[in-house]
Image (cartoon, rainbow, N blue to C red; front, side, top):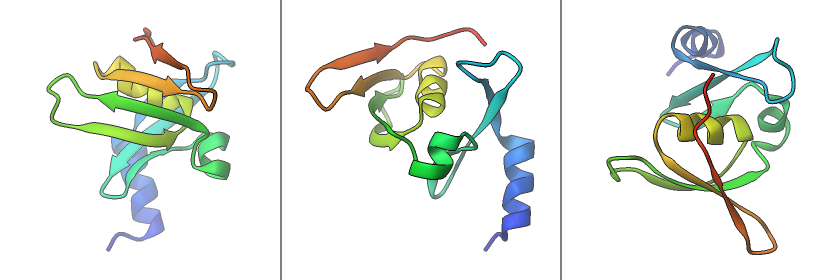
Length: 100
């Protein structure tokens, strides 16, 4: 089992950085391991994400219906997955690929 210091090092070395949506000088680190996706943004740290998304990867080998943060959703869209954010009132919005 990996301890917290080792996991922090793995995230730093292997995680993917994604820019903040509100501050061009800030970025967050996205990481995926056997427990799923993580992000170091406050939404993820406090609530484990507040965005309900459905995603399908381009090969359709992996699909998901998860609560996550907007950074992980954007990372999945940028990686080529089809990503939809679902809203409590029944509508949905496609998350488009963005350049970094």
